[in-house]
Image (cartoon, rainbow, N blue to C red):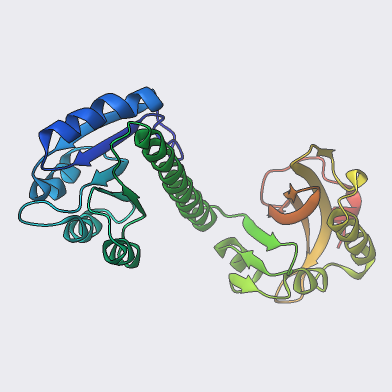
Length: 282
């Protein structure tokens, strides 16, 4: 089973050049630089968009001067099919005008051909860099889409807080307490003001220790994350205090807490057992 965040490990490169000898040379040289590379070739640039419909292509390497359409026209056609595929213009025509036009277009990199085979090491490094970047972007988008889907379908109230600015995103689950989902710039203050007065000081203290990155503020902690559970009473929009359990994770960057994600669970309806008597009091 392939997980939704999984990206392929190999790199499929489509090399487009009307010179059969050059595409054959690239097919030999590039896999020598990186064994994960598979080079497919195409001598007719007008056939590229159709191939993208049927094949997985992770990066396109194209000549500039070709019959019918040039490399810059090709990149526009590729963009109309899949704008996420990195496109490298690999051309023997070296001029400042072509380079400037390439960089002003949707081309991701411009590399001038050389007679030395060492240019393929340069090309291979650029391919790997662009493919890794594109995959990281796609993975981040998938994670964001999945989080949004989970947040919409789950009954728990999920939150995501920027610990630098305090801005907090609350999922649709917050509506069970009578509040509108969405981003609140004063996320923590909005939340803590609704914590029961008898629980509020402890909630503020816990937050301050978490923002300071203190290990004692977490149930368990490692170099990248701190996990915690917090029970308290919280005021709904109609004024009732309900017992909640928050489970969250704080992410660290260079030992600094930067992001918090978690869920607020109504322990009365979640089937949770053995929550503290204090949290269940009204």
